Image (cartoon, rainbow, N blue to C red; front, side, top):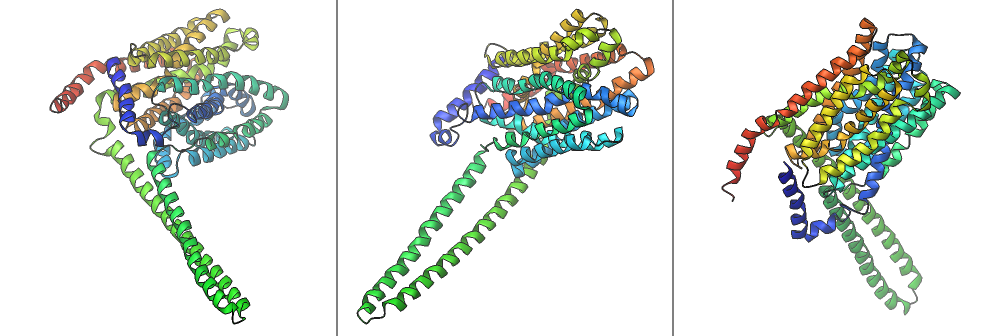
Length: 514
């Protein structure tokens, strides 16, 4: 796996050296505006994923306000987290037709609208629509373009770039947890959601920073610029010809004393020709825009269908299918500490220490370093990203299992630190996915992975809440979800067995070329 990744890293360099035109067209790859994309993606993770990880504060307010069961109330945050990820494959189709910039800006507006409308909720079911569905869809429309654009702008140090951008989740969890606590205490949870909705509107600015880098779009833009330049040149040529004729007639008729009449006639001809050229150019521009949109929609739909349901479907890759099973079982366990940790703190009587330095903030801070360190390790040619991914997942699963056994603040803080660092494997997910399916299928494959994570996040917290309603203890919730996480890790450990047949077929196909 390590050697394969090293070879894959060298291939883009060879292709760039062999194609100077491609290098000039994509001069911002690995530099320039690429770092602005990292900043934009960082802010998206801070405002979207960080807010969702801090929903434990609002969850407690909703329990007191509406007096519903913990299982039903937890569905609000679960819907928001789940739908943000579940819509990934469909947002991918939307990106192919509209582009990342427009998709992210529309998503930013929807997310802000969901926060503001939720401030006027009269029941938990009202929050299902406004916060769970509306804000969830908007967050998904911002989140996927942020990940995809970083992948497009970076070829070297892609894991490190993803790690730096996704650290926004940790910063957001820490900052927004403190912010929501303060706003809820000073202004109430309804006004707090309005203020947070205004802050979330900055996602539209993050979307505006997402300049398209797709080669097809650049080719279309270059063609349109050449056509417009050609029209601008041919337009004045016609005018110059008419000017020449008019000047010739004018020179002849100056002698006859009729210069004023011919000058007015030439001006009328110039204005008429300018109007005709303008109308023709506008019609041509509309026609080309419609044609471009039609071609984009058709090609996007065909690529989307072939990736999911065609003969070259991603589901023919057995290792990728095992990876999807891991995603279905894993994410429910990861989100449970963020949602139910405030309640656990109350049950264990460590609220005073937690108010001084919240445990969720410890997870968030260490999570930042975990993503950067694991991202750096994932780019090293001597380190297998797959092995680092499995080790970090195993550490996370064990930490979730033993968390209910910790009844003091110090022991809870230690386990939360382990959860924060090991959950930094998110910076390796795009890299591992690329190793499994290749760079061409990365966007579609990653959409499936985050969709599976979304289903897991949608069902996990309510499941834990229902277990508490039955047993009146959160211990069993952590035990069950931790065991499910271990089952998912077993699916990852089957990779050598599932991959052997695929590698044999690939080697047999590649041997004639050698």
